[in-house]
Length: 226
Image 1: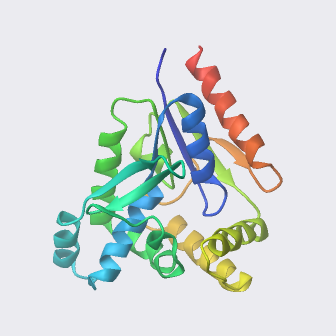
Image 2: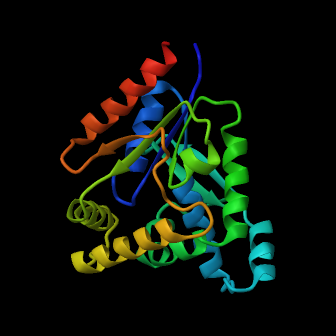
Image 3: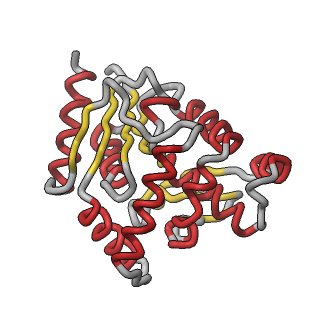
């Protein structure tokens, strides 16, 4: 059967990652969480006090970090590993969320991550989500989806996600963080967050999780079965 590349882009807390995971599972494809790669890089930079304005420090840090994904059979999740350590919980904290967009604007960081992502998807049969997958990482992707949602809905989802991890954060603080990230992601010089001309937009504000997964799987199967 023909294998394709599915690129899912969009704003934070629109359901990109959770949808992409389920789509990959439904298609029997590999799931690659590009956002987790930037979060893991941000965590490394924070823990090692990397000066983001010093290209030499950034280059040295990038040379010393290795990001990988492993499937955890106990919880059924694809988890992020940084230099051999499971950092899935640490990369979802607010301190990482508050810094990840700034780290993502650094040219050297984006080049390093894009190179890794392109290598991972070279043989196709992958679903990857992020902010520049359909425009920069895989501009020739067979299916491009751009996900969006109302800010109040996004903030509520992120609050629930943090609460599930044992952290209570004020809704207004989350909205400010999301708005700040939207601005940084959309205005950065390196690979800004924009909808690809040939991407199909899906507004998830009032869609159930099952419905948004079904929409993407349906679009993918149409292309696979052509």
